[in-house]
Structure formats: C-alpha cells, structure tokens
Image 1 (tube, rainbow, N blue to C red):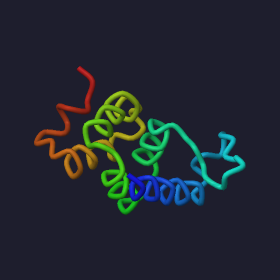
Image 2 (image 1 turned 90 degrees about the vertical axis):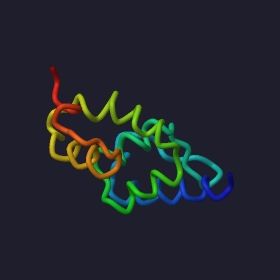
Image 3 (image 1 turned 90 degrees about the horizontal axis):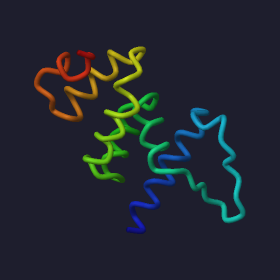
Image 4 (image 1 turned 60 degrees about the horizontal axis):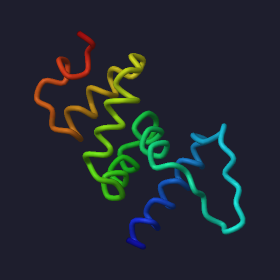
Length: 103
C-alpha cells in the first residue's frame, strides 16, 4: 500500500507541475498533498500525458478509473479525440464511436 501512496504522490506532484490543480488549496503541514482520488483520476484523464495515465492505472483500480471516465470525461464533448484514444487504447473498447457518442 505504501508503494501506491508514493506513486500517487508522484503523480500529484507531476500534475501540480502542469498546473492542473490551480484552483485547489494544496497546502498542508505534512508536506504531502491530499486530493480526492476522483479529482486526481479526472484531471489525469483530461489533461495528462501517456506516462501519467499509465501511472494512474498502477495506482487505481481500472474499474474505478473507467467509472470516473464515463461520468466525468465522456460527457465533455470537447474531448472527443481523447475519449476515442482512451477507449481504444486503455479500455480496449472495440467500437469507441458507439461507446462515447451520445444516443
């Protein structure tokens, strides 16, 4: 479990460097950042690079990531190309268009 927490902190630090949490208070007295898992997953899926997404799948359960992807990322139609890529590469969805386009 400690390894996952270290990896999560590593991912958060990388996302902070990219200024993806600009609207959140990231200060605390212990030198670590506590952010909700949902927020870390969402921001990574929206904006991070492939290495960060791969790290995301090491830290969190694929089912949890996919659930947040469905709820938060897919509905944002500005990210169609990214959703197509995530569907095809990370979630092994055979027909991404049918999965990510609204009915």
